[in-house]
Length: 180
Image (tube, rainbow, N blue to C red; front, side):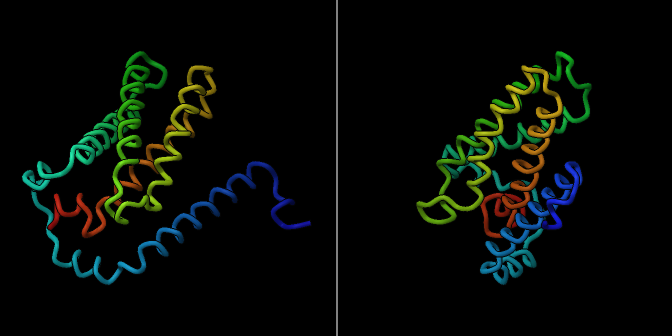
């Protein structure tokens, strides 16, 4: 019998989450390793400044929609975290958040510039978002609060916060808007 199978349910769940986090971080490191030298040089030259509005205006419509949806999702999501759950405000703002996240995920399908005309590993978050959003909404409508909370928190932190950090990698559009 393996050591993992001898662990009880909650401990096994925690072990699996930690393993998934480690695998995710390793995948990110392996993906970004070939670009590390150039990114470090660019980061050393970068400095924070107001957004480069002409650069933003020059972006294709799909990128503008993606950025607008991401900013709206981040702001609404942060506000939802601080408010009482289940209240009318939470439900209304929650629907706005779902719409904004749908815009972010839907628009990201058409953003393929990083790898030419191909999707990159970051598009795995797109697929997951398009699967997890309906699951979270159905859970909320069925009053399965624990499932709803887990999926929504996972989408907020994984889909927005982690991808937000990835978006600010030197050389990418968001980096150029604020640091180049």
